[in-house]
Image 1 (tube, rainbow, N blue to C red):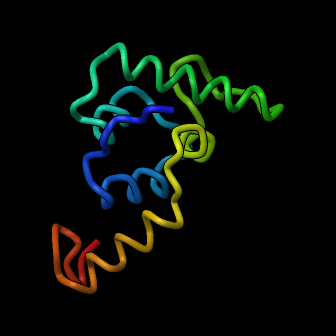
Image 2 (image 1 turned 30 degrees about the horizontal axis):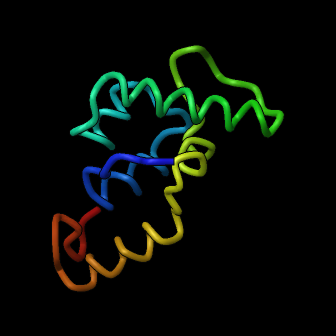
Image 3 (image 1 turned 45 degrees about the vertical axis):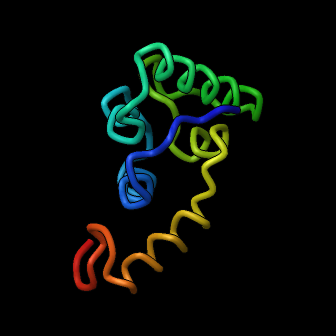
Length: 99
C-alpha cells in the first residue's frame, strides 16, 4: 500500500501507545499532508484489514490502532528503534528526559 509520509517518528510512536483507536483527527496528526480522500482511503484499508482478521470494529468513525499500523505497513518496532536512536542523539523533539 502507498502510505503517505508520517509527521514524525515521535508522533507515530505516541499515537500508537496513547490511543486504542484512531479517528480522523488522529490521522491528520499522523499524516498532516494527506488529503481528506487519502485519509478516507487509509481508514478503509485499515477497516478491511481488521475485518479480514475476524475482528470487530469499535465504531464507524475509528479504526483500531494496531490493525491500522499493520495495514499501512508501519512497523512499530522499527519506529520505536528510530525514536530511541533520535532521543539518544538528542535530535528532533525527542530530547533526553522528555517524552
